Length: 248
Image (cartoon, rainbow, N blue to C red; front, top):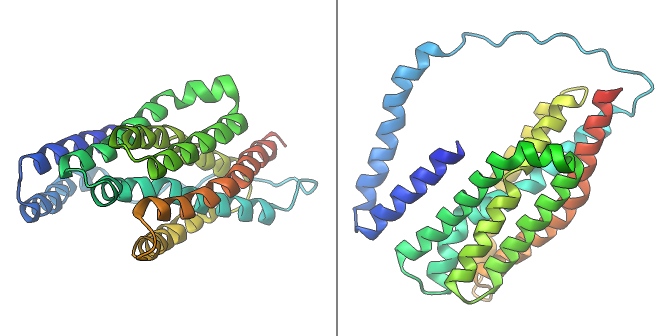
């Protein structure tokens, strides 16, 4: 997934730099997955295997509290992922007046950082522990986005998006692992929070960035920094309690 995102970002940057028609580009993007599905669909399983029943320990904490924390943490992680992914180019083009190809490189930097973090995530988890890694990742992601949203130079902005991708890369895998270790419908809680935030984040960011008094960078800071601060607390709690529940 991450390698495909980087490859797609690089190709898209080259297409923009070459002045390729955007409508033709989007049409090709729509046709290619449809053709791929023709070959992929026959290999899909007709139904998921039924998982083994899990017996909960009555002395463990109420699972609904864990589910709520996990759902909120998953929702709070979305702005740190969606905002740079969808608004990096606008930050460079609209706020800084950069060329379209230069703006596309900001998105490439974000995807490169995310890919690097995903490749190193397992080793980092083994070395630092899941809870400590999540805290550090949220700090790096939020700091990178704050840098990208506030500095005036395109080079530093691109570097900020690189850091943002590096930080957010491990957050979703860590929360998914915590959901797998948590009793009850934890995967459902996580994805409900994720999908709701996925619907609301673009609306909130669009409303803020569309305000005449705010630049794209200022809108990013207003949305991302509070989300990162809350995720620092709730995300670490979800990962820690998910592992504790699994041990019991």
